[in-house]
Image 1 (spheres, chains in turn orange, green):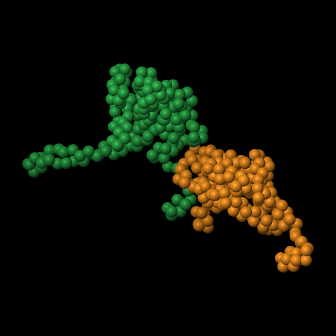
Image 2: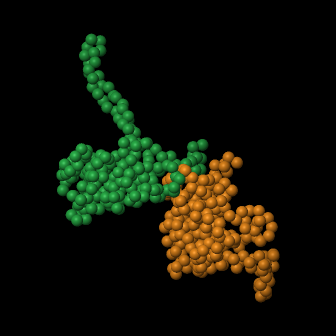
Image 3: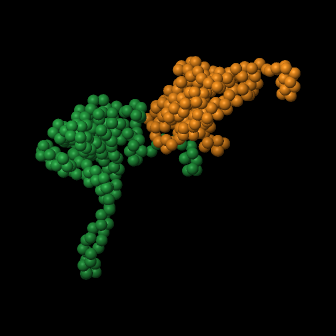
Length: 204
Length: 192
């Protein structure tokens, strides 16, 4: 619908919208995160939900302890290689549409533990991440900003057409392979369908 | 009780044992006792029962890789009929070993720490040491950690499994020659 016409109509007390906008408006204001903390970032995430920062203002106060009832995974903290299969499995168990916020330096890249032997170098190697937040840990304001960025992404999603999101495309997967424990590390070390390997991007 | 006295008690109490003093040259002067692994368990029992070191607060390990030792030796050789003193450098390989370190305290006497060390024969096939978990129960998880990350096999341990890495993992990440799997794209980019 034409934006100018909509503004003009609203001046005359007529509210016009589309089904898509109404649908996304409802979805973005009722995102239920998974109760799920991995390390120190989880403390900031908890602080975000409490009275001082109050994530409830954005409709995300209901943290669900079951992945079947959640649609947002906040990966808050260091993902060790031993924990990574469980994180992917939890993501697979969430119903569509589902979103992921990678919170903090560890979750987006391995952070200070990147050179270690036991930490995954970013959860985006195995599951698609919608918003990355840097910081060690990010402040609650940063998480709220990431949440608002996610809300913007949700409200911009089109329900039909080629640019519709992943969960509305039947041929795209909603579950991703769970890595297995190998002799030297995770097998495979990353999911190439999800992870944009900078080496491969440069080599074309 | 000084460390020298403890060493004398160990040598007197366990016939045939070898107990060395490992000197720490730093200002803290925290010297330690190196016990041969054949008598490690007996030495631990003596330390607990007779010297009342009843609490083991910490178990850790050190990896000492093979190293090259250079010695300068002065020899007398006859060069052109004249005896001369020639300095030669001789390089010898010193085989590496794995070393386990116990920090012992006495809750009764309120003293400590006494640092106890044991060394394996080498770093590859003879890596067994006696487990001191039967003596100090608090050593159990930390000996498992040393087994996991350094590959020291503790004989007599009640439950020797990996504790941090998963079963099926074959490396020992805290060893000096450990190389992590090549999965860091940014590092690989830097090499190209």
